[in-house]
Each structure stands twice: as C-alpha cells, then as structure tokens.
Image (cartoon, rainbow, N blue to C red):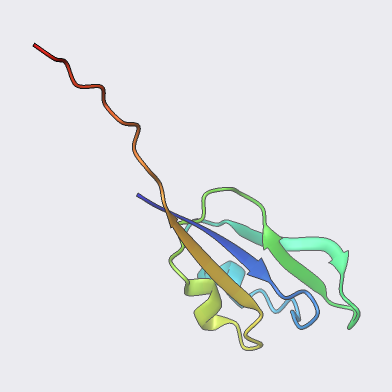
Length: 81
C-alpha cells in the first residue's frame, strides 16, 4: 500500500482551492495562516493522503510537492518444524 504526504510552498500558494477540489481523499483544507502575499495557505487536514498527485497537477503556482512512501506490511513469523 502506498502512503503519501505533501509539502506546500507557502510563499507562493494563493489559496485558490483547486487542489482541495481535486483531492479524492478530501485530505486538504485552507489554513488559518496567511502567507506574505495575504493568502490563506493549503495544508493537510487529514492523514489519509495516498500520493495520487492530483493536487500537484492542478496547482497553477506549482506550490505542491507530493512524496510517496511504501507502507510495509508486518512481517509474519514462520513456524519451524
């Protein structure tokens, strides 16, 4: 299973909300924080990102970078005979 997370370059995010609408997991929302341009910035509101990159694809500012990690399954202990 793949897990994802993202980093938003808050300095260039304009809070357009296109990424919020594009997220199938509804993982994104607007923060109460404002950047130096006076825009509310996007951030993760839920820890259920799958790394689909829809948010990064629709961001007109290129402010989102998505990282994917492979979730490792717990190792099963083999039985010796």
